[in-house]
Amino acid sequence: MAANNNNDLNTLHPHITPMSTYLKVAGALFALTFLTVIAHHFNAQLGAMAAPVAFIIALVKATFVILWFMHLKDDTNINRAVFASGFFFLALLFFICALDIATRMPEISPL
Image 1 (tube, helix red, strand yellow):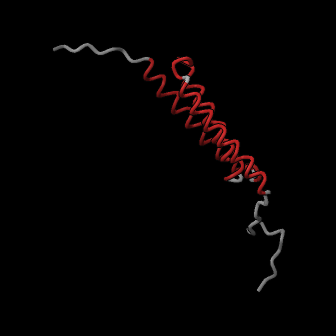
Image 2: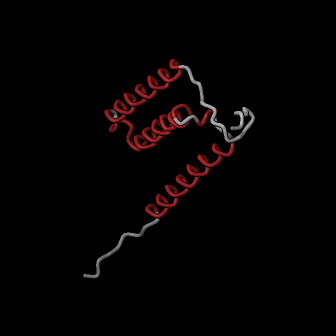
Image 3: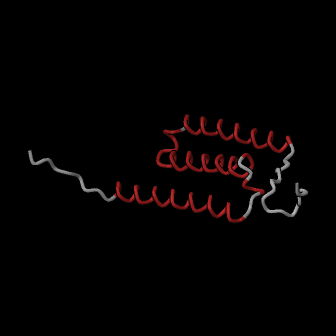
């Protein structure tokens, strides 16, 4: 058998993150979840800003999960580009759907 070469690109290198970091991130996720609940209770006061506030909180929570729990923070630039392109096309899909809904003409029934 060949000796394990540490310079081999196919060897797995575990990401060693302290447990305290995971607990801090988990605490931040719980705090953001409570912030989401609080924002929901002020839905009427937020008015048109209710949805953007909820989306921004969700975006921050997703960023924490992707960076620390999915280890993208310690990963290569190509994997970061793949994740970023996925979110870019998701944002493009949301934009096109919102544009379609905003530009619809009301239909008048001929009956």
